[in-house]
Length: 281
Length: 237
Ligand SMILES: Nc1ncnc2c1ncn2[C@@H]1O[C@H](COP(=O)(O)OP(=O)(O)OP(=O)(O)O)[C@@H](O)[C@H]1O
Ligand SMILES: [Mg+2]
Image 1 (cartoon, rainbow over the protein chains, first blue to last red):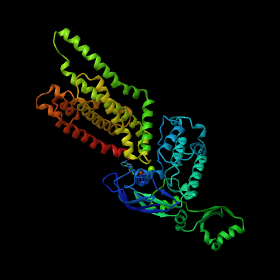
Image 2 (tube, each protein chain N blue to C red; image 1 turned 180 degrees about the vertical axis):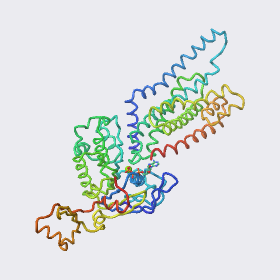
Image 3 (tube, each protein chain N blue to C red; image 1 turned 60 degrees about the vertical axis):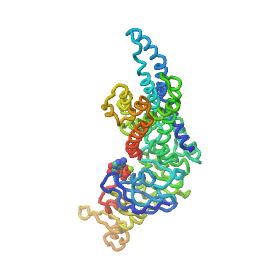
Image 4 (cartoon, chains in turn brown, yellow; image 1 turned 135 degrees about the vertical axis):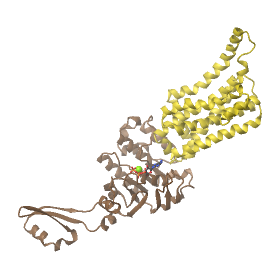
């Protein structure tokens, strides 16, 4: 569905996006994960044909970016990082206008009600809160029922319940066989939603795999426990698959002497820090 | 074509909802009336007062030229204001990822208004000009002034970051019109100091009546458009 080969791009003279290549299959949610300024939005802008002047080959939905014509966008839905809406028009008028640009579109009121904006349909967008704008901006990308979705931080600035609604909508699109590129800072969202993620740092892909594999590669999960030994608190760690060999641990369990115990799975964030030496947020 | 017309429709809707822009569009009609009826009357009064045969009538062509420039200028100013708002709201960029496309957006915001401005200025000139114009020559002049105003429009959107800056720059961009009176007052070679201004060549074309002057008039406008378009395209992505 999406194929990127030897992609090079820069806003300036110094190279920025260097030799990036990856494939995304139909029906997959593919995540871009990386710190601020890594080039995630830049990559999305290249994939959607907004930035020209790149080197390499980019194929999206069977069309080569650079040679695509405007009907290509009938099947592309884009949710920019920042809202792109007519502030002086109401939510409904906005969607009505965007719907008029496409050959087919979904029912506007159904979409509005899915993100809880039906009651605000006739309110001007300038009177919307940040989260309301994000939600409206998101359904705008779904309006023409596109095959490929590019979502740039769709859940940022949303409260947990609205973020949940949006994540369910994303999963719903995936269930319908849509291909989705999802940019996020949030490792939990990435772990939950993405089939595969690419770690992007300084315009490079540092790692690319399923969240599960990335986490597994770091080695087994661990159990951390504490107990008291002549008044001193002692901290111990044991890999989950070696607990039966840890005599201290077994003895503590038998004698009910454990002070605390928790299993520690590495998160995508840990993997990210380990592979790139950088923090996600 | 359909997305393009819907995109143009939302453009018209924005202008009609903005009283300032709506007023801007009526300005050429008011100016045309003021020129057509006010200036010959002022001429009569002035000539009687100073006891002369003609004072302003030698410059009637210049007034006509101002009218020919003003209509497209005002239309393109309104267009620039809408585009600046759209840039601010990220709409200009978003259009590029819809079936409208980047080129379609530019068509609907520059070429369509330019074409309408051309038609309106031909009509206004036909009814309100102070001197006699042949139809082809008037059409040519209005075409050139419309081309020029597209350049002005690009200048406004590529160098200002919001409407306030755009309005300030619009006043400055009046400088581009400075070429109009040059052939009327400067007769020596110093007039060619203004040769990068399309307005200078338009005025010279009308004063000299030499059709060959169309070439520099078109070329200078295209040069401005080309340079500014490059800058604007970067802003759009
Ligand atoms: N239009 C532009 N002109 C020049 N440089 C730009 C432009 N847009 C982005 N950049 C630069 O490119 C780099 C990557 O920006 P980009 O927006 O792709 O980052 P990002 O990974 O999306 O970050 P964030 O997570 O903060 O959104 C930054 O250093 C930024 O300054
Ligand atoms: Mg970004």
